Image (cartoon, rainbow, N blue to C red; front, top):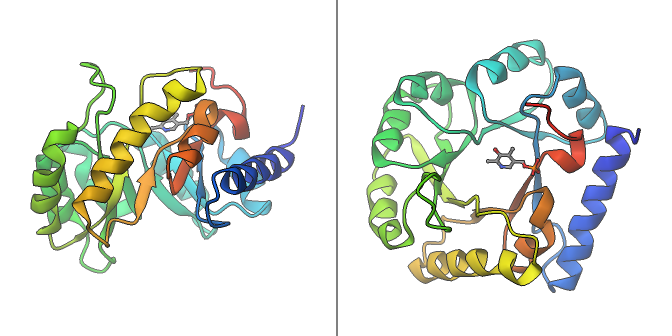
Length: 226
Ligand SMILES: *Cc1c(COP(=O)(O)O)cnc(C)c1O
């Protein structure tokens, strides 16, 4: 089995190669290591190899790992579905939330962000494949959502997040990202400096289409059993 450290350096090399291919600035794409369902020990291995940003999808699991890893300088990102009754803990225990998919959730996160912490970095989740099952704002709703969320005092709107319908073909992978990138750029809001898209299966397409943060689980930690 390849070690997590070796996989991490391979992913970072893949990111750099894709940046070069896309004529993007080096290091314009950050790696978010998605550690959901994986043990704290795996996080430590990636941490020792230099990784600092970790993404989790399940709140209770994340809180347990955070306790276990409290002496490490980890920047925690919440990337999973959000129920209203979980916002208080999410607001208190994460630096970033990528999966803000309704205004109500944004309002709660802002109200519940502890006042001793800096504003919570958030991304609006956009439904770019128009799947009924995937949550998120429609592209047409984005401008209005941005306007409403920018008024929330304890949030810092950083950008958008998307999870497209899986596709294996490079061109097909590019299409939804291209549309999203164009739509957000057209809003022309300098504070929105983050595009959170690209996973293990479509990292290259995501980087070609302008992502600034790829969320990688499988390629780093191996397949998930659940
Ligand atoms: C699990 C997950 C990922 C990581 O996906 P991989 O295909 O394992 O790289 C990325 N983003 C979100 C929102 C996830 O839930």
